[in-house]
Amino acid sequence: MKQEYAIGIDIGGTNTVFGVVDHRGDILYRGAISSRKHEKVENYINELHAALTPAIEQVGGINVIRGIGIGAPNGNYYSGTIEYAPNLTWKGVIPLAQMVTDKFGVPAALTNDANAAAVGEMMYGAAKGMKDFIMITLGTGVGSGIVANGHLIYGHDGFAGELGHTTIIPNGRIHAGTGMLGSLETYASATGVANTAKEFLDARPKEDSLLRNHPREEIDSRIVYDCAIQGDAIAKEVYQYTGMILGLALANFVMFSSPEAIILFGGMTKAGDLILKPTKESMEKNLLPIFRNKVKLIFSELKEADAAILGASALVWELKN
Image 1 (tube, rainbow, N blue to C red):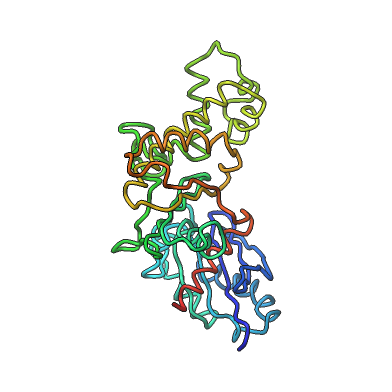
Image 2 (image 1 turned 45 degrees about the vertical axis):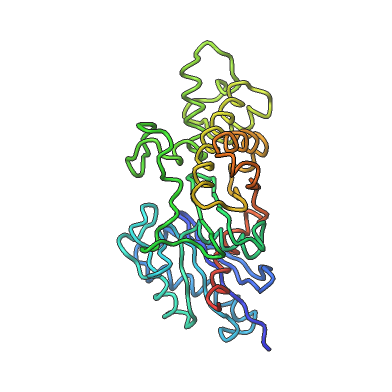
């Protein structure tokens, strides 16, 4: 029986990363191209094909490629389309999966980036063997993938699971991209952490803080983390506040699907216990007794650099089922 491989592609707003992956989750070849270079998606796919061709030949040709999995913002699993993604060059509805299939000659599956991460975690990471879990990606935004009874929840239209856009504080912060008020993403993302820090500094103008050593416009989540590690009171309080809000949201999510675990992934998790401890405390506090101390809150086991490729490639093995 011949060895089969999957290609995983993750389309970000700036760059596209890709790799050839085997059944064990080993990435045999990886590369990247710009997501913004081509105004026409056809030219982008041509460059992607040219960049991947040496890797495909290296593993034995297109006949040993089982398929191509793609993670993309606003990716619709049912239709294989990217629909009105605000941070991509190509606008409207793009039938990307079909275009990739036509170009490469193998099946292609597409979903949004957070759902791809959930599939990857289930196949290769901390959720291996789990049938009920929620993946929360904490980066520039807050993404999510919900797995119940061993299946991703896509909803009737393919867009279920936008937990980052649920309202957590009525009439709270405005979300720059959606115009909605008080969504989880405006508080629990890296952007949210930076905004909380600025709000705290404004509210306590006489309190000393290492954060004041940085120009206001340069304060980001990395600076907040560095100051918190050095013991800065306001920076540490930012994480307490963020964890309180995130934990409250997670409690709501737990009472919706009763998962075995909630898995946190993304740049924000580098804060470790600074974010994990207050989040766990808040989650347990806001749960009904029947749910308390049942749900594991853990960090992803996938390497951040590999997760996007692995998550997308895992879609290919799902196609076999």
